[in-house]
Length: 277
Image (tube, rainbow, N blue to C red; front, side, top):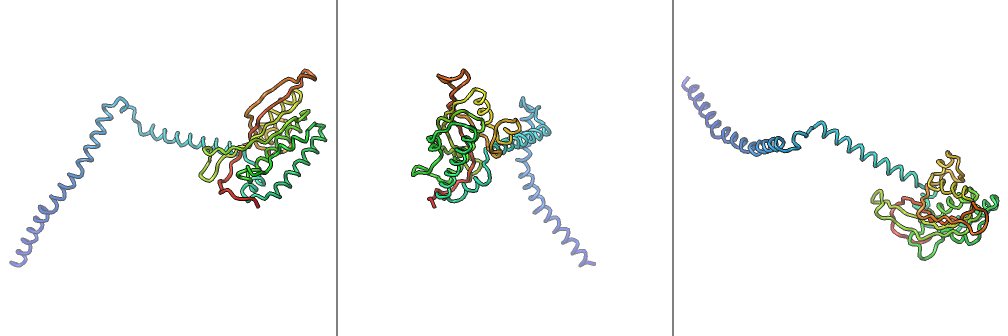
């Protein structure tokens, strides 16, 4: 019994020592750590109560604002995707732009396009001078990225084919202007916007000019749905940079000369510049 009593006394003393030497100091440390947090909450509450905008703070409204911002961002993303779809070239052309440039293949395509356009113009009795075809995109030492010539050739095809299909009386002049790269219009670190530019002059009746100008910024399928002349349903949108309409010095009152600069845009993958194969 004496031994049991002694053990009970030692256990009680140990518990007391643990309480005073461990638990109480630990509680004080916890309180010390909790004080700055409580102070911060107090300051936040005081700020909300004294700030003129404090009463306007609404967690539910803030959640709705977040949802609205996410929706707006999604709409911007949709708009960007819609823009890309309007200027997207056919898969065949895109594939050629992603491959190494083959000069012989390009020259053959250039000759084939010239033959096609001459035949189409003859069938529509459209006057097209030989100088017009010399304005098609051609390779020379000044071309820094030859593979992008495929985009220029496609745009030239769509532009001249549309002019012929609209039965413009004469294509007086056609010129491929130096291409421009728009670095800051990239959709990712791997893609950027390429702009192909063309200058041309045509002579036609005012009604034909209106049809031609109306069809330019439309995709091929959009023009067809509006019953506008169109040869290529896959034609992307083309954009007018500059336009000058003049009356002809001779001829009918409705005859005009149309001078314009047209742009075609395409996104392409950024690659290191390579030579010609």
